[in-house]
Structures are given as structure tokens and as C-alpha cells.
Length: 70
Image (tube, rainbow, N blue to C red; front, side, top):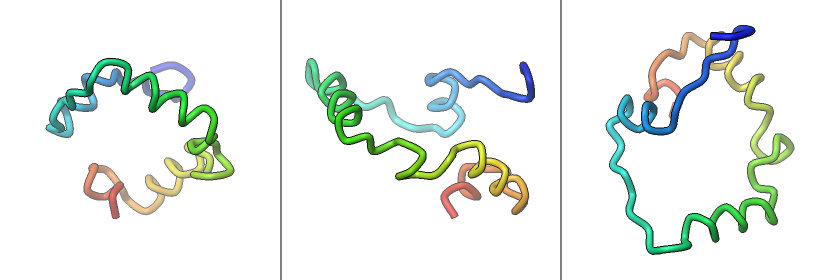
């Protein structure tokens, strides 16, 4: 942990949440990434600032993935 930040690797998160590893045809993930870049769908103005969302989550007693979904 550095500066109060936690770094999680993609595979670790998938394992912790017991999520299946999706199989996509060749180039689909690149196409999804490009579509996201052009649409700017994950910008803070569209989904909120992640650091603020995490503070709110912790303040409400959230600890698990189920809590996050709620």
C-alpha cells in the first residue's frame, strides 16, 4: 500500500469474486476499449469520481462485493 492506495491486479479481483474468465473472439477487447475511449463512458462526469465513491462506500459500512452492488 502506497499513499493510502491499494493496487489490485485484474486476475486477483476475478479470483476474489469467483467470476468466470470471459472468452472473446480475436480483437473484441480492443474494439470495446476503443468504443469506451471514444464514448468517454467511464469519465468521472459520467460515473462519478471513484475516490469519492469509495469514501461513500466505506462511510456506509461497505466491505464486500455484495455491499458494493447495493
